[in-house]
Amino acid sequence: MQKTWLLRPSPGKSAATLAFSLCLLTGCFEEENKTQSKNQESTTAQVVETVSGIEVPTVPENPLEQSDWTADFLEPGKVVEVPEITLPAEAAGKEPAPIEEVTTVTWCLPVKSQNAVMTRGYMVVNWTDYPKTGHHPGVDYDVPGDEDVQLQFCGNGDVVDRGEFSNIKRYPLAKWLGNYFFLYVPSIDRTFLYAHLRDAPPALGQANAGDPCGIAGKTGTANGVHLHFECWKGRRTANTRDVSLLENLIRLTEDPACVLAHYLSGKTNEPPCSWQEPEAPQPFGTSRTVGTSSLLDALHHENP
Ligand SMILES: [Zn+2]
Image 1 (cartoon, rainbow, N blue to C red):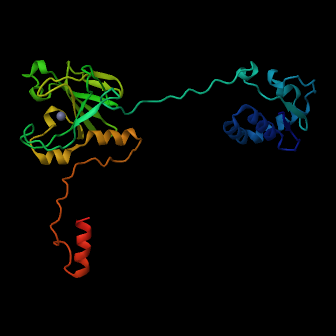
Image 2 (tube, rainbow, N blue to C red):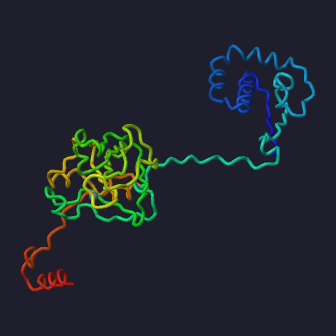
Image 3 (spheres, protein in one colour):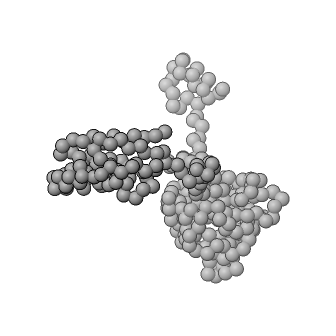
């Protein structure tokens, strides 16, 4: 398609028209227009004089290719044919290269396997293994038949604490957690704990979602190879992970599987993953007005 620019002479407006036309062609509209309005009065007379004195040369075949073409052949009232601009790829008969989509991994499951299963859920009651709180503070993942289960950082953040099973003196928590590390994810202000790793945990510092961070193991107090995985509110380390009271677990931990499922599905609001004690069934009749109809309702409701 050919675009046509028609420049009409108009006393006192020639400079503005010329500047405006140039701007449309160069994409510098805002800046040039400001300049023009500032200097309009002083330059109008000069430009009118210059334009009216120009000899009209032959219009070049492709005006865009001629340097300083405006001064050579533009004059008020002259019609200028502007050729369609062709991109190099199009000129060569090729489809323009598609713009590459840059995707950043934000969330991953902690176990890199399609076959991972949860072998113990969040807050499952177990007074034998957890004599203080009676509840499992995280989830356990296992890959049946695989002794070489790759682990990966579940989110973007920092390894803020770590402990080695080979040095329990220095890392007392390693007696239970084995090789462990705490991954703090600032975007959601949560800390994920990985425990029982086979080998020494990753170094402190930056962690990118999806990067490998070890192999599942059974170091510490564990019956078999698995990943014990916790989610704490805020930035936690070995010193601030307090599992001495059930109240702490209720207030400060969340179901890590639920949290990850929430963010993996692209949601940005607070995940509804906090544990709440299941409501005890109400004794028959206690919360209802005594009367024939309400008693029937209660019967239908509580004994479906
Ligand atoms: Zn566990």
